[in-house]
Length: 596
Image (cartoon, rainbow, N blue to C red; front, side):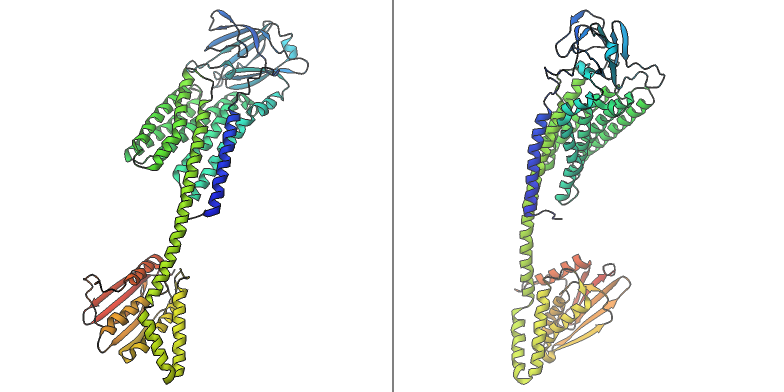
């Protein structure tokens, strides 16, 4: 299917280039660390000292308070920005327990006193403390406990953050700091839902590589969005554990879709088996994690280390599978180059969860690079499709010219000369008959020319009328040496135009025409249980069907064209039976399924 040609394809490619440029700008803007604003009075922290895991007390650090791994952390001192009046102190806690004290009195905590299966799972919470409860803020103590020892604590602000403002301040912060990220994720999801599937259709067929990448692109966008907004989740999901579960589930689905994309691009049978095993194992791991979570055995965040290790190993295995196929297919090379950034960043991100070494959003960068790479590949594919469409149009033109040449070649020059000469002789002897023959000759030529425009099969009655005009002209030429008989018992079927004439022409020219005293050509039709038959019989010289067609200087393209058109348009067969000295029978067998 050729859906886009010429100007439309050019416009589509230009639009994609503008989108690539816009995406690059968004990635650049979105990668800025908006939270590091020295003069921002919204955020607050505790100035004083801290102790990690019951150890010695150290002075707090500027801007971040603490920057080292911990299982238990205590910070004491004063707030740099104390809420006053109607303002409140907002506390966001993610996957960590906290207790906040003022002058030795507990003023806020996220510990739950229930007996549910999630009693040991902190989840995500947002808490508000009034200015009255805090007092002058001179003696503040914060206690934090990380219940997930397998994962690195990373930066403190990923677990706990404080700000001063109203209850609507968090929405203002969301708009101020996260707008570029949200736009970036929406754009990624847009590509996943629309651009790449449409691209597969534009390329003329269902492209499973683009389809699989679109799924990965969508879940990648959702994953990045969830990772960026996890601190804001309790604004919409009030249950702390469900906030954490929603974020972690996006990680599972993103990783699974990435593995599926790579697997779809594999070609070798062995690699496909390995890919299927990995996908099945990843799906089983995700299902197991969900079951363990909702039965209270182990929550989703606690199982994250095992998922990260598994995905990292799978990424390495599938990458080697792709490398082993580099010499077999162009698409494999393109897939490898597009997946290298995200696979490498995915493995580094997994390692970073255990041994914290950077705060850079590695997976987001890898996803952006992979998306840009895939867009470039898409533009290359569209350009290739555009060039192929030009070649297709050129081939269509050449095919039309060849068809014209074929139709003209079927009207043999000697046939034209003989017909015109016969008509000229009739003009003096029998003007009325000459006039009738001229009309027949014009109708015959018109029928041949009209067949250039007619692609679908026509009713047999139409083909029969054209055939009769041709045979009237041949009877003028051969006179008494040519006898034409018709035995038409059915006409309720269709047939490609000009598909019977070449067979009748062979019967006239190479059958009875080669016989000294001439002969008879019969055209008959029959209806059987499963098909219609058109039978052309002559009692001419016949020929040996076992021998190849001799090189006699004539063109045999006409007969091959008839066979091909009958097969393609009607699934029909041409059967030739002949016996030397007795004649030839040509049968066209048309299945009834074609005629409905």
